[in-house]
Amino acid sequence: MNNILIMILSTLGAIFILIASFGVFKMPDFYSRLSVTIKAATLGIGCILVAAVLYFSDFSVTTKAIAIMFFLLITSPVAGFLISKVAYMTGTKLWKDSLMDELKDDLEKESNSQQKTEKEN
Image 1 (spheres, rainbow, N blue to C red):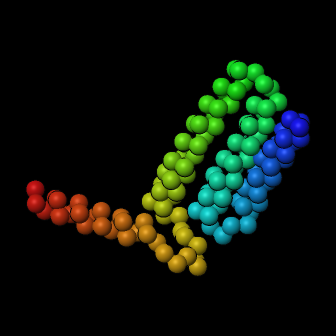
Image 2 (image 1 turned 135 degrees about the horizontal axis):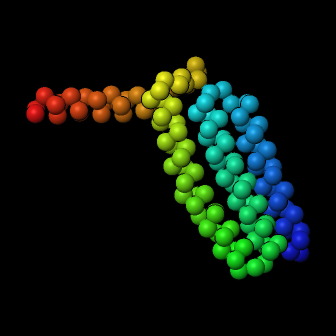
Image 3 (image 1 turned 120 degrees about the vertical axis):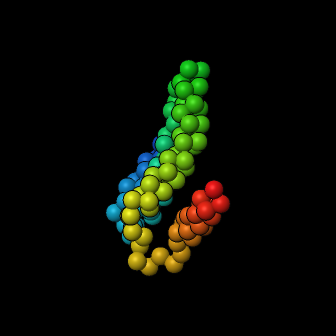
């Protein structure tokens, strides 16, 4: 039973990583590609790490895999956010059929707020 679960998790992990690689080619703009890559790759790596924990039922492997999963789940969304914000600030264009640009509105509000503060000082 344990071997079947390991095979299922390894296969699922590989499939999620494969989906992430297809997303790089199929998505229309940088931001969609980044989103698909981060989500699918994180889930895929998590499945493969759980399979490794089940295969190597050793305490040191388990603690290392749990630490890797924890840091991956914590850092991936933050890294994706920062990468996309830097891309936006440097002028990477949205997809031509994008309906909303919420960051543009937020940046305009922030800019207006800073101008008011500068005028008061």
